[in-house]
Length: 410
Image 1 (cartoon, rainbow, N blue to C red):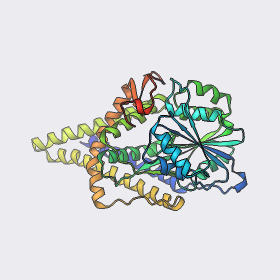
Image 2: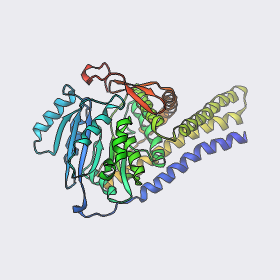
Image 3: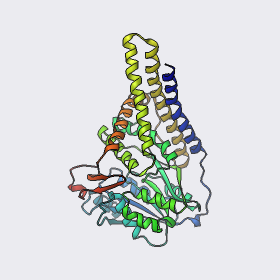
Image 4: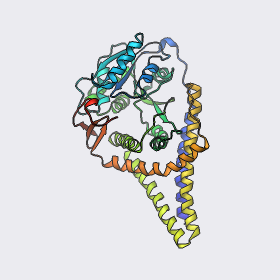
């Protein structure tokens, strides 16, 4: 019984410690002041496959950045892609926008499509671009987004800068809430692991002009992997930028949320050295929680109130701590976003809070199942394209098809 008590305490206090350390850094981070003339010319690359509901809003925000010199390059997957018509119509309505449109040619079978599009664009850039910034179609940037990503690159020690995303906890869909808890569970570890998010990622020219980058881009399945490897070999470091926390308000089904988690965890398995630690840690926690449930219910059936109260009470405490930590993160991120972005995050009221707490057990189960599925995955489907997983750290596209010829939606 004493062992179970200390185990419960550990399961609660370790995440509390992690979130506390993360928020301590998060609250103290400040950007240096830089003269306007020192900002390098920046290339913003947006690789698009399929007409995302937020695509037009994304474009409008990207071309209205508070930044002195930059160009937005949109690489569309195929001329027949539904996004092509949306972008062309948007461009016609905004002829003054710093926007250049191109199409993906000869995608690599050894990389996913976004990587092929990004690398194709990089190879055609003019020599005076000093920074490259990646965005996704669901990256709803704010006016200083580009400035906040490029500014840390002006340090001689920094070669790569990343932001992150935050999901709306007030969404009514189960899948959306599951994604919120998954994301809130991942944000602090991503800081400690030095993981990047391709939806807001900046790299300086000194890195993407290196031999390591050019050679690595031929073999790697992900542009994020190439960027990180080239940065570290160049003797530079990654900087995580807390100002760049992008709110995502999209809803999701449970099936979509599960596939999203599985895909993200599979990428972690393929390229990050901490994968095995994450896998073992997750299943130790889940075995403990499952054991608490079984033994606690057994205690109820045999009339052992102390046993049942301790173990089932531990489960309730774990759920409550997950809720409190998620809210703590949400409030801290919302305060900073309002101050530096002017973005108002939705507040968590009591109906939302109750709905969130009811979803937490489901989120735990789906997350654990997604991690197990990612650990043994031999193929993954993304945006209608199936990729075969080739251990230890490669993928192969089975067949390329434009989005309008696939049977799956994004």
